[in-house]
Image 1 (cartoon, rainbow, N blue to C red):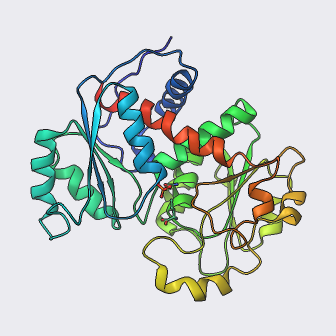
Image 2 (image 1 turned 180 degrees about the vertical axis):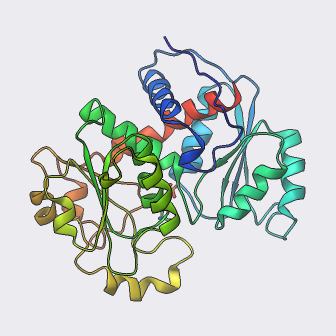
Length: 308
Ligand code: CP
Ligand code: NVA
């Protein structure tokens, strides 16, 4: 059985902090954890969770991952710690990294996450920022690999907002040389810096396609993916975005235009009948709950490769 190998970098702040080989290694370790084929412990190690935004899956899967590894976790609620009072990140990071062995941070600005990493003596993991959701992308590609065995000829179509989830799919997709098509309404395309970074990584950069036509994006695709139209922090844009995204719902009609064996993914939580219909979530094409489960296995692998 393969043993977790330490990553080259201290922190996991972006999908691009790890190499293509490291992505494959994490997915392999995750598969072994999932199949109960790997006995590996992080006994007595402590994970600190700092969540400035709500979370169900990321929070709980990290806690369970740490518990399965024989370690423990501390969930720091900003309102009951000094974080919400505005204690500087550089102070919080220096203090917490003297107690904890690794920190997982969910916050708004990528620069705040980078500030944690700069001042923390221990690894810092991106548990979602406005820019990226790299742990999610690892679970997504694990789910795709389970279905299609490898990434050759897989076409992944993301229909919706060019947000954090789309950005990490693009970057991780570039590392894995997967064809990624993004369909967004005009003005909601992914960040151009992300697109440019991805295009530099792809050997064949025509594999990344950005369009405003969801039907064009899903034609013959193997994986259809969506996320909420308004992310956390965009609550005041909900009404406007609901109108702008009209026509970008993953419904049975759109699924019919994809490959016959296409699967459907959603990072969750979902707004049924907005970005995806109830029928599609509950359909035979859906691998959404397998995808959620895989958050646990990839994070168990990631923790093992960061602090082993
Ligand atoms: N997909 C995801 O990150 O879910 P949570 O917001 O519940 O953690
Ligand atoms: N794009 C969503 C993802 C939630 C997991 C958000 O940032 O709210």
